[in-house]
Image (cartoon, rainbow, N blue to C red; front, side, top):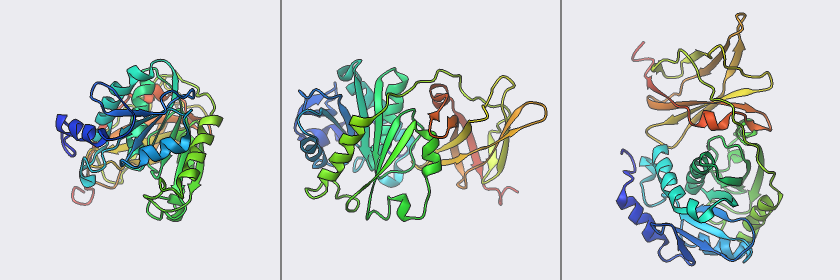
Length: 331
């Protein structure tokens, strides 16, 4: 494949990263490691970026909290070549590694920085397979896909590059729709130093709170939000008007999230579509195409503010491929 070129070689690189990590290895490829294995609490699966983070968090959480560690693609792939599809592939591999170990019990999933993106993809894979995930945690990453889970989102008080609130951004309207509930937590310090001795107590404290106060997630079995008349090729930033089939309904208290995933990076384009109810009774979605030319994968998610995705299982399996072209050059 393009980008990271995920392969057996990449698997070996990831295995080498975790070889020296303390704890028992998990999975047929030895890509996971568990600490605090005898603890009685539901396990926390966490995707880490480097070796020192895992033992630091395991110690701070305490012996009653099992912690299953996996490694992000940081340093395994060039960041400028990393794509969403790389993360989805490694998430599928990780699901094969840990699902037999987790069995039918409940657990949580989280990750920091690049690990958060893989954690979200791993959550998608395991949820679709019927696993009992009770909550999602992410540190220092804004652009994540919809999940029908309660989410705790953590950012550094001095992290100007990763904390959206230090960049005059407002991701809260999106977060209110893509998660069953979300909580923002601010960590002391700056990016890369949250696992240090002076900062790890605050990080562990927020994680412990998230694990102890979660609500049991609700699962929806509604059909996917399919569309008709979606073109295969559109111009950059073009406003699209897409009709929904007559049998498809969007309730008055629902919004529709439009999620574009790029085939050449790991940065998505997201927006809330305008839902137009025509005099004929049909429903139309209006939204903008991405700015960057290339191949994109498009998904639609029905959502309710402060409730989250309302047809997640169907929507997350429903994809459309669209080619974005230069509107000026092709006008």
